[in-house]
Amino acid sequence: MEPPVSGPRPRTCRACGKKFDYPVKGSAATRHHCAECVELPAETRRVLERLSARIAALEHSLRRLPKQP
Ligand SMILES: [Zn+2]
Image (cartoon, rainbow, N blue to C red; front, side):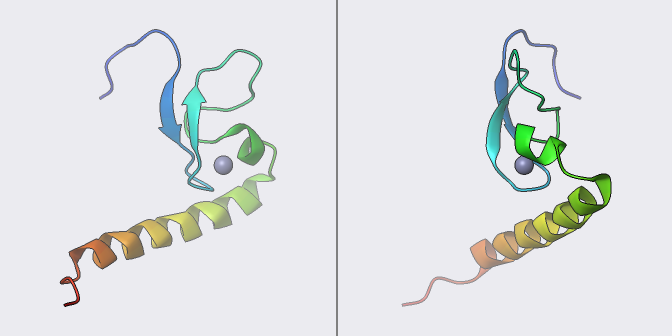
């Protein structure tokens, strides 16, 4: 698992993929969601997480494609 650290560290939002620091004083962001996505209804966030996972998978397979000449 993750080692205990003090102070904010960069995280990637599971829903929108945005990079954000966590924890930040005064920010509603959680470990997995940025401050904006935290405000979304749970069902909406679930859909975004699904799409975001698909995009990540696509990006992964794109990186594995052979380079075009
Ligand atoms: Zn987000």
